[in-house]
Structure formats: C-alpha cells, structure tokens
Length: 528
Picture 1 (cartoon, rainbow, N blue to C red):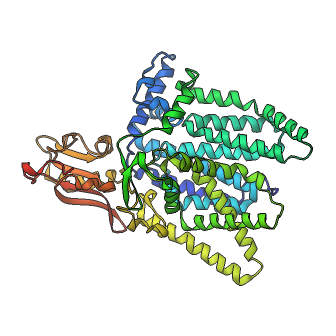
Picture 2 (picture 1 turned 180 degrees about the vertical axis):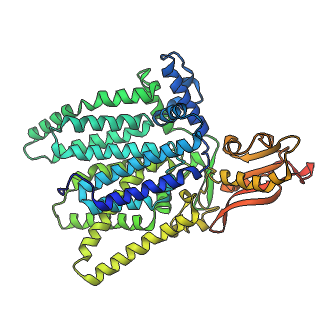
Picture 3 (picture 1 turned 30 degrees about the horizontal axis):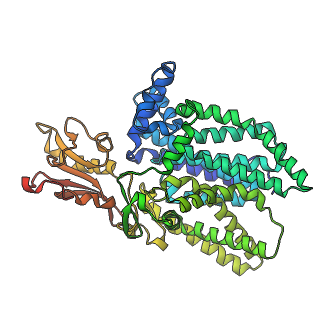
C-alpha cells in the first residue's frame, strides 16, 4: 500500500469544497419522501423515551419502526427542538446530505490508503456522478446515512488490517463505533460484521508460518478486536433501544426483513411485478442500469486487471482490498441467492455504491497507468474518461434536482425510463407541483371552503407546502377538486381531470397537476 502524507491534497480539498457547496445550494429544493413523516415521528418518540427516563414506550408500539435503528431520526428530532422555527423537512435533508458527505470522506480515506490519491479522488468523483448517490443525498434519509456508516466500517476495517494481530486500540474502537452506528440505523449492518470476520480469517490464513502459527494469528486477532464489541453494542443500544431489550430482538429484525413483503408493485426492464416476486437478477440489472458509464467501465477494468494478475501469478495487494470487495459482493450475492422482496431499484442497497466506486476507481487508475507508456493511447484514454464523465454530469444537470432518477445510456437514459424502470418513486416532484398549483389557482382568490386536493403520495408531501386556508389534502379522491400525482407506475392516470401544470425534465413528465372541478359526478371515481 502507498505511503501518503497525513493531510489531504489540494485537489481533494477543492473537490470536497465543491461537494459542500452543492449541498448548501441544493438541500432546500426537495420534496418530502414517502416514509419521512413516520420516520420523523419515530425520532420524536425515541427522544420522548429518553426524556421520560425510559418510561415512555410509545416508540416501540409505533407501526413497525421499532425494527429500525433511530440514529438519524433521533438527531433530526433533537435538531428540530434545538432549532425551533426551522423547516424540519429541509433540516432533515441537510442532515442526510451531511451524512452523505461523511460517507464520501470515508471513501476518500479508504481509496487513499489502499491505492493512493488518484484512486481516492476518482472514487469520490464516480460517486458524485451516480444519481443514485448524489441525487439521493437529500431525500433518502434512511439509505444515505446507513451507506455512510457502512463506508466508515469498511474504512476502519482497511485501516487496522496491516496491524493484525495487534492493531492499535484506537483503530479497534473506531471500528466498533462505525459498526455500532450502522446497527443504529439498520440490522443490515450484519454485513459489516461478516466482512470483518471473513477478512480477518483470510488474513490469518495467508499469514506466514505453520498451521499452528496461523491459528495463533487468528486467535490473537480476535482477542485484539474484542474491545470493539462493547462499543458497538452500546451505540446500537443507544440509537436502537428495542434491539437490546430482549436477547432475540436482533434476530427477529433480521428474519423479519429477510421475508418482508406487502402489496406493492415494481417494474424491471418494462415488466411490472409484485415486489415479492422479483427475479434473482433484479438487483444486478438495476445496478447495471443505474451506475454511470465510467463506473461500469472501471468495474470491467478492475475485473480484467484481477484476472490478468491471477493468470500471470503476479504478486498483488488483493488481501488489503478484501474488505472493499466483500462489502460490495456479499450483500449482492445474498440478494441473488435468497430473492428477498425488492423495490425502488437499488435504494435499499445504496450502501453498495461506495465499495463499487472504489473498485471502479482502482480499475480506471490501473488502466490509466498502463496506457501512459504510449502518449497517444493515454490521450485517447483520457478523452474517453472525460467524455464518459460528461454524459452523466450533463444528464443530471438537466434532471436537477431530481437526478436521483437518472439512468445510464445503456439502459436508455432517463428519457427511456418511464414504463421500463422505476422513476420518481419518492414523489420528489410534488413540492414543485404544489407551487405550480398555487401559481395557477391562488389568483382566483380565497375559496369559501378550502379546495380539496388528492395526492398520489402521503398527505404531508403536499400539505406541507400548501396553505391550509386555501387547500386541504383529502383521502376522498372522488370529491377532490385537484389531483397532484407522480407519473411513477402511472399513478397520474388514476383520476380524470384537465392537466393544468406539470413538472418535467428532459421532456418527460415527473409530476402532474389536474383540475377536476369540471369533471361530472359519474366520471369522478378512480379508474383503477
């Protein structure tokens, strides 16, 4: 592994300054995601649990939220109380983005330690070119924080490996903190534990000496890592108290989510299906569609480099890369093998993106080094990389702020996504649509009774941006005067009405607003 200065480089500081500027400029432009209201209520209830001296147990009776850790939601609820008057939804989106920024720092640190500055910078750049990361940075308030904590767990694992079987205590405690925070968000943090275990086992198996010496190496490594356990359990218990209230709770959460399903549909390459009936290739195919072209090229280059090194029996530092490889491969392999209920594309597996970006960056940088021997080849390689980066960058600029829905050109791009891939599943465009509704209807004056607005989303996703004296979100869609709907899964076709506004990008409508006041009574019922 390369020897590097302790401080980040000037290009790294500049890159992270740009990311911070992007966050500062964009966090206030997004709508409320579908699960966000219940998540925030859960955070408030957890805060009440601690404020009551652990006697208010309402948090553990609220829907099924007790199956999730509350790290992010606790922070958001506490910030809401410390900053009264702040728009809580924008505050949550800023906090989510700050978690994402922390995840980028972990990716940079991991790449820098394993392969040097160039690989680290390319990995961060690839993540920011991935709409499923940079576009999700604000509204995916469960997925981005979890992915960031998992990235920190990977970094912590990579840092302590060279020191086995006697890693410094500080590195061990940092590993425990990262894994504990990941469990404080989702039980899926078990993948970090699996990655750690397999990596330590492999390192011990490859250590020099006799079989007895290797077994001793493993035993000493395990003992040295034990201080991470109480740190991880303490943080998990702090942020997810239900998990430690009974011995079997962690296992209950794990088995519940492995068989979790409900009445919802998803679409895969044009085929609509129930989420419990998705094929084994659902996640791999969505990754292939969502990852930007440069990342796909980098992953292919990494695979070629690994196969070439193996065929020529070259000495490589692959064991040091094992935590990154396992962080990407283990969850993907398990999803393929077990076929869990899946929907929203790669959303639940957002935590795969950081290790995939690192592997892709390593491949691109290795290809760049090989091409330097011939200036013409290197110039061509650099031109292809620049062109490959510009394609998703331009597409996401045109989609902003909804670039979490971006698809690569191999999958048809966003223009080819409707009806083929999941699009605005978080109904992010509803906020802008409500502004368009107001711009069209407010000039008519204040109605005698508030206009009734049906929304193909959760009520709060529209009501938060509509004045109650003029507009009231209703569950009675038959009576609704207006209809605001995402076009995702054709929900906008459920109710008749005159389209008076639409949120669109690249010529594709994301959200529509319909005026239903002139629809006769016999035609007001939902079409399905």
